[in-house]
Image (cartoon, rainbow, N blue to C red; front, side, top):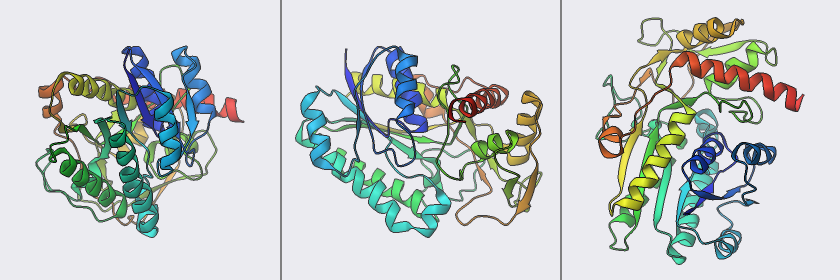
Length: 337
């Protein structure tokens, strides 16, 4: 059984990917600094997978602690999720984002290199494309970003490309996600960011449950049919499955890749709100406010390369995504009061 080191393991996508790793027959060593998650996620994960996998509360910038973990375990590959992800916060605090996302990745790569761990899947983002005008964005689109979160991903991708060309036999897969939503079918894990969330669906769920008073929709004057921004929403378990196929590819091939993960179908903010209300029989009050710095009108994926390389494509529809979120939201209220 191959062992995968997962950073950001208690985060939204990291935790769901761990369930998929165990289903696929991989073993896991997990680390997270818990800056935007909780150790209770690990307890729930262990319940889902039925295995008491090792978890360490570690920041990837703490190289000595990361070294101590790798010394204890034979690591065959790594999946690197650890990083900050709020677009609006990154506009206000760029140094924080470059320190966490770029300096943190450099420190982590140096430790991996020293132990000969050169298979890596990196968690990137569709924000690397900026305000690109094509209806479907392919991996060949130019990279640009109006905010530090997206730029931090671009910089890390550049670093990964450079080390892949050194002759040191790095084998790296870069996954550019579009907008992961949904939750695990068990209802035990989902997206539950600390503080006020910056992503749409956690906000919708908290408003629907009465935790927050009203959903703020940032802009109703975008160049879209209903004036609200359009995004490519993808179920988090489809994203998790993408990591498994990416790992399988890296273990079977001597070359890396960069691919999009998305459905190729965009939904506006208002479409998502109305779908959430319909499938969950709930009410989501909202009001429009000004656009956020760094946002774009439309962002949808051309994910044909992922299908061509390792047979990945999305399989879960928006109705199911919204139902899974509501199941999780109901459970998390009961679990955490």
